[in-house]
Image (cartoon, rainbow, N blue to C red; front, side):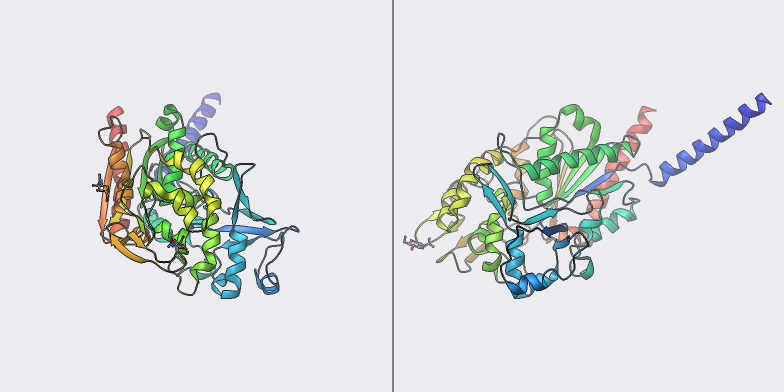
Length: 433
Ligand SMILES: *[C@@H]1O[C@H](CO)[C@@H](O)[C@H](O)[C@H]1NC(C)=O
Ligand SMILES: *[C@@H]1O[C@H](CO)[C@@H](O)[C@H](O)[C@H]1NC(C)=O
């Protein structure tokens, strides 16, 4: 009898082992992958409290049309706000404020916000799930990753965040941004541990790359070795963009034709992450004029003066203390990095203003349509000749800042890179055994 029991136990054990092997091979032994979206690239929810003062009757009565029982509604993105009467109140609710006493940013009074679906890809597939087609964001990328064997929730994760906020130079608090980095760190650890302790591939778009690089650089070497397989960045604006100066001076509708740019300018100016993306003197030539007016010109070393002159003096102090010292360094994280970005797309390089309230004349240069080439290439120049830092650059001619997430050639290159990173590790596994 005893003998038989042992046999049965062993049989159960081997069945269990077969199942175990099957279930790991059903995720193909891929390295878990975490997507980190760019600015505006994931949904945000808001709730109005008693402290909230509405700007108009219409706004209060009609926006939002739908709330959940606890009062939460999707503030980013709801296409309803493209209707003129609601754009203004949307923009007021999206405002953030810098508090000089706390030396940190906070929401508009009476507006609570939260990021839905942290950990999942759900919040970054579409910005407005009721208008999937026109607000699709990372959906084509996620589908392409699924085609090479990734499964959402199993080895494919998303790290959405409140993109209005930023990180700050050392010694300055950035409550919201720092909380995101610690959530991202926990997500990396749990993605690894639920996938047989395999290190993780980070795949960021735009601003997401700047957050991820900071997380890597503030983590101990041993942590990076254990948890990070590879860092792939798409369209990352390492040194900011000239386009951001246009946003600060005269507002940016992000290509939405119905919106008056001056109506959203105040909100765009208030965002700490926009301040982070102004052209950095570390990357842009310090003497080359980026903005030219009849009075003077502004290079990357005159950004504080530029903020003053466009009528945004509130931005000067946080820019000088929180942003400038932060962007002065682009340290190498000592994990393999691949930068993927478009090139050869007309990108604003010099802005000619007669009046900051009006649209400028624009001279274009090379880039991805939003980010200037010098900024896309900044890691290559900052890290050249650095020992132990692997950096691969993939340029995609004619691919824009956003189409890098949608274009067929681009998706092929990205999944090709992900596959080769994965097969690299199985080769080395074979080698070890
Ligand atoms: C920087 O810009 C100035 C003025 O446009 C130019 O004379 C100089 O050659 C540039 N320096 C580099 C390194 O490109
Ligand atoms: C140029 O200077 C004049 C006089 O100070 C000022 O009124 C005007 O707004 C300035 N224009 C620009 C584009 O800076």
